[in-house]
Amino acid sequence: MSVIMPAGSLTSRERMIRTTALLVRERGIEATSFSDVIEASGAPRGSIYHHFPGGKSQLIAEATEWSGAAIATGLERALAGGDPVAAMHAFIDVWRGVLTETNFDAGCPVVAASVESAANPGAREAAAAAFIAWEEALAGALEESGAEPDRAGSLATLIVAAIEGAIVQCRALRSLDPLDRVERELATGIAAPTG
Amino acid sequence: MSVIMPAGSLTSRERMIRTTALLVRERGIEATSFSDVIEASGAPRGSIYHHFPGGKSQLIAEATEWSGAAIATGLERALAGGDPVAAMHAFIDVWRGVLTETNFDAGCPVVAASVESAANPGAREAAAAAFIAWEEALAGALEESGAEPDRAGSLATLIVAAIEGAIVQCRALRSLDPLDRVERELATGIAAPTG
Image (cartoon, rainbow over all chains, first blue to last red; front, top):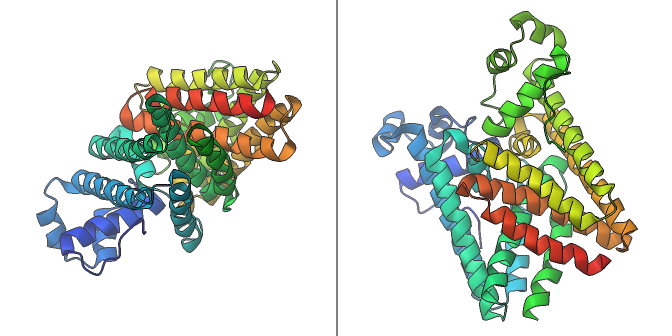
């Protein structure tokens, strides 16, 4: 399970989107320029305008949508095992990898899009759709494990919010401690209504 | 209790810091320029360089530090009542106000600083100190209410992470639902080890 897929088999359009997501998760939207994306993806300058006639706002919105879908796929794959607690541990492990592999420079591109959303409505809408998709997947799995529908929904929101908040703290503290602590608390909370 | 204090009694230096915090919580660090701060605070152009010889990175770091301290003060005041669950509700109410008063454009400036921290080490350190201060205050109150020290620490991290993560989601969704759901879940979680 990988949060951001390898570039190998992607079209040049997809490669630009992936490169944008990788830059945004480290720098944020505002600090990620078309030039940065061109340089990092190796795309010819003209092609980016060809593929994204709506300019940077289109590229950022599509990168946010793509990140949201990639993370949803990883989460759904983990949940398919039928054990929401195990899936949560697997999901957190992926983020642990992202944080340590980038020396705590990278976080979640969907959070970055939300934090700078006032000036980026397309990215904001893609971020909202991503949060909803992740939480629906989690809530469904929690219900199947025996949680009441209402409880499953709010627990799913808690899980996503706490993991995202912990990733933000890990970046600030340059430490995995916040994620470790949140993981421990969430494991208890998930086990309670479903066990 | 207010997250960001009113400007009335502040010095012009403090007013610049406060203005920066208000801009960063909406736009992020990168999109907040010296010119924006000068315009929004009404400070004379020369004075900002006088007060912040380290330039924008100093101003952003001090604004993050100031935000962290203001939020810590509000949190400590709420916790002084001796009821961590009531304090959490009061704290979340403040954020509800920030979100609705700004039409979901504003979030937490400390999270904004963390998300763009790769290029802003001073702001990152101030954000880390803020998270630690908030969680120490919460953990202390939870311990006084009967939680085991180890549990109090991880529950405090869960509370801060989940509220911050929910604020991010509220901005993306333009809705208070994520914060409402997280509040319900946290109230159960806090009551359990201390009740």
